[in-house]
Length: 100
Length: 437
Image (cartoon, rainbow over all chains, first blue to last red; front, side, top):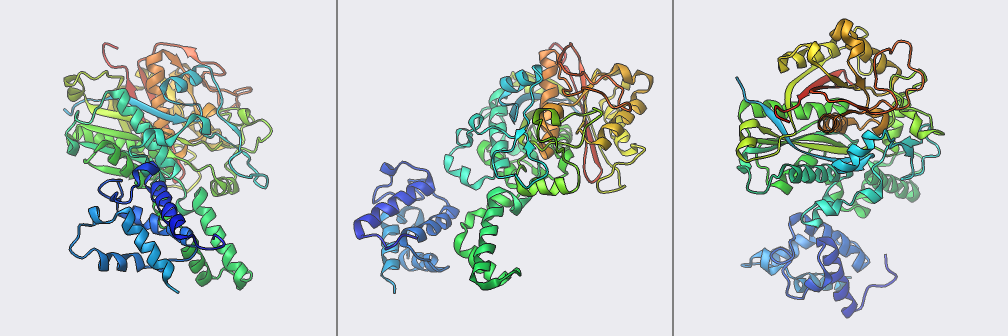
């Protein structure tokens, strides 16, 4: 676990790096609006891998079900394959970081 | 009369080379793939030798599309996928060559599931963390589950499932036909190929990717087989440890790797202009139904498998030119296998060359039968008999022609491959030179 959680700019870069590592994609392709499934080849189990590795980025556990709950509340009426973008994941991590 | 089944492609990942050229060359030169184990600290193990696929010779990512899928594959699955890719390339089997629903996969698989390599470690670390939290010297399941859940990537469990190697091969090649995994240990590779042959003869499929993969060179693999007294302990002379039929043999050497064959119905192979490497003429499988590790002393189960295979092939013992032995280098197998050969071949037994490629490769368990079938196909084409190396002083009870020391130039037309495994399963395949080759 890192000694302190990353600062905002660092956070985005850490998330980008994690997405690139999980999906074995070049970092350059992990743009803010890149959709993980539509553009970067992600499938459902990659999300499990991603959330696990994001715990290291955050420096703390992400309780089971939290990512799924975030999807349910933020994807209403949207197509997940297009809507789960780098920005989407960064927003999730920032929300997690703000929790006590 | 069912149609003939032919081999149009071969792919291998072995301790003697990755790819047909390297593998065949090693067999021709009688090289040994056995080394001191250097992939984990084996100093407290009684057996410290194995035949690994050298890291420098194998890059899994080179054979997987997209490369992201490598993380879902255990080592055996990586071997299987690589061997299948090379086999399909060898067969010239492109993405549109076959109706996907008539392209199937049949693989032998082994391993120890959650006790393999990194999977064992993730559990061990969780146990240690739980103990450090005050579990003391008993196995605190509750603390272990909490610790494991916290530290372990959820995808880990997917690498423990033996059926996923065949699933990955299917994904790589769009093989939507029958997909099966055979788990009969030392016999699995042979049985997986035999099952594939039967499906093809039945006309249910047009092409099968068939073979086996295994990667059990890890602490639990060595402990499991070692504590049963089945592994060689000739640690100071690794290359000499696998010595089938030899007087001072003391057990088998664990190997790892994979082989996949592209098997087709003959009419399809000819229609698409494929180069045919050999014909698979016969297959049979039996079980000793005797004991878990001892073979029947009268070798009745093994003999029945050999006879059944010849009968299935429609040939007599006199027409067998070469035998690739199971030849594990255990005191028991090699003696009994010799007796089986004498019983089936009668007076002619001493004239039928029988060699054990396990002398060079070690025992690849679920991959053994497949790699040995690949060796038969390649050696038949190349015109040499692979040797039994390390045959310094033959066991007096083993007095056949084991092609000792050096490969022997020989044009032969038929080859019988034996696999006799733990659990008493026996399986044999017979191949023949394709007419005109």
